[in-house]
Structures are given as C-alpha cells and as structure tokens.
Image 1 (tube, one colour):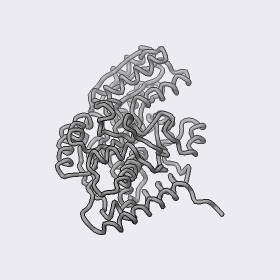
Image 2 (cartoon, helix red, strand yellow):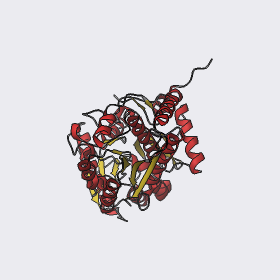
Image 3 (tube, rainbow, N blue to C red):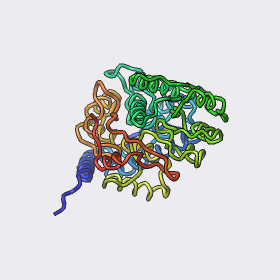
Image 4 (cartoon, rainbow, N blue to C red):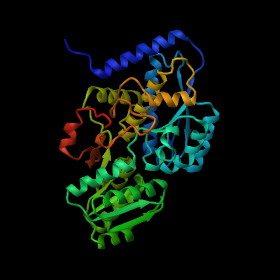
Length: 400
C-alpha cells in the first residue's frame, strides 16, 4: 500500500488539532490577522500575489476549524509602496487589535513601520521584503520582527558566487536610492570583497527614473562584463532596455525582483537570460507544490505573477497558524505568540521549504542560503538557470 505523503499527514494532523480545539470553544469572535503590502501602485505586481497566498492559506485553515473555533479574519491595508502610507497602515492595524501581521514587500516601507509593531509587542512576519537590516534593527531575543523571505545578506553572496563561477568578475552595480537599494548595495559590495573583488562601476538612481544610458555607458567604458541590479521591476526594465539600446550584450543578474512581471513584461526580449536568486520556482516538483499551484489557480483563475511572493505569503500564514496551535489557552497575546513562533513544535511541510524550528529566540529569519536556487528568464517565464538546481528542487530543503 502506498504511504501517505508527509505533508498530507502533517495537514491532516493540523486539521484534527483545529477541530479538537474548535470543539472546546464553539463560535465566538474572529481572530484578526493583519495583512499589509503594496496592493496597488508600482509594486503591486508582487504585492498582490503575496496577499493571494495569505488569503488561500487562511481559507484552508478556516475550512478545518480556524483557531479554537475562531475563524481567521484578515484585516488588509494597502501601503501603495509608500513609507508614509505604510506607517499609517501599521498604526491602524495595531489599533484594530490584530493578533499578528503578515506583511511588507518594500524594504523602505517596512523600515519606517517596524517600530510600530515592536513597541506594541505585536508580531510581524515579513514574507517579501528582503533588506538585511529589517531583522537586525532590534536585538533578536527582544525582536517581534520575523521573516520568511531570503534576506539580501544571503541573496547577494549566492548570486556573486554563481557569477564568479561563470567567469564574470568585472561587476557594475546599479542600485536605487531607496532603503532596499542602499542595503542591497552594501550586501553586494561585501560579497564581492569576500572574493577579493570590487565593483568596476556603481550607479545610483531614484525610483521612477526613465533613462540610465549615461550610467550604462560609464559601466561599459569601465569594462564591466556583468550588470548586478538592485532595484524593483520597472527600474530593472529601464536597465535592460538601455543595454539593448546600446547593443551592450552583457548579462544582467540580481536579487528576486528580476523575476517580477514589471521587469519581464517591461523589458520583453531584453529580459531574456536575466538571472536571479529564487526560493521557489512555479514547477510541480513534488506533491506539496503541485497541490499549492492547483489550489491557487482554482481560487484565483490566473497564473501567479510572482510565485515566490505567493508561496512565501502562504507559508507565512501556515507558520503563524502552527504557532497559534501551540497557544492552548486561547489567549495569544503578543509576548505569548512571539514565544510560540520561536518554539514551533510541529514540522510544517511548506511550499518553499520544510520548516523545522524556522525561528528561535536568537534567529528571526526562516530562510538560509542552502534553500536558494538560481532562476533565469527564458521565453518570458522564470525557470531554473542550472540543471543541478532543477534536480535538487525535487527535495524540499530545510534550514541549515
């Protein structure tokens, strides 16, 4: 007889636990969970999939009983990728009495709002924003800031390692002037220094820039053989289209925004071959991922615009639920839930990874470098850049 896959067994166990807890407290008020991100505006291409991943997971959790008979109610705030709007949204979520919040896709937006959650002792799980400083702002033992996305301090050296192996060592860095670009630039420079390398050219630019030809010419004249970009989708497309206009055929590499539709659709054929760090590529490499992809398409009737954002939002919601199941008295106050997140007892067989003790008192980042793969834009979609990653992806990775 065929054995039950581990992830199905885990979910079945979770469902049984939910129903058992529900029997102890029928009805009652909902449990409010905050969700905040850029659901309109220039970063909505990855904000919306993140929200949809959260919604899908919450629907599944509610279908098997929610938490102690209480349905999860999502309180949603659109930060529009604007730090001031994000700060206001964070304040409104805390004022609304949310138990915890899942959110932020833009590092600069998150940076301005972290203090709100920390001061309120209200846990925040960041499923998208990758700026290294976000989980380093507060001492880990006291921090209420958790993350399920790959911080740039592991993305940058991962990509640098790959390009050096390919023989590309004359790097031009193009980084925007937001908090994301600033932190990413530092991480890339540190990763290059670890290889005894230094960028041959560094370009800085604000969001909304339409023309980077002057900077691209300077990078070309400096002898760059690869462009490492640290910005979001639209500006990445400006870089790619500028290279095309100059007929400068060097590769473009970077962090995960090179997988965003605003880059791929904005650059079209100029995006082909771009490579980036990924935690999840939308291929049904195992039953858990196949189920997630099918459920997502059934619910939203569309392909995922940014699979990583959707998968990380989904996994974040389940990790929060698994921590709630450890709070048996039905009173998940901020400090209690923080401790529960740091001590999740059950293994969660997720979409991105297998999460076994993803957080601890001294570590608030769930993703380690061994979980990353290199993605590549091929025929307008993101696939594996290396055959060995496609094979390795058959096994869902654990944090090391």
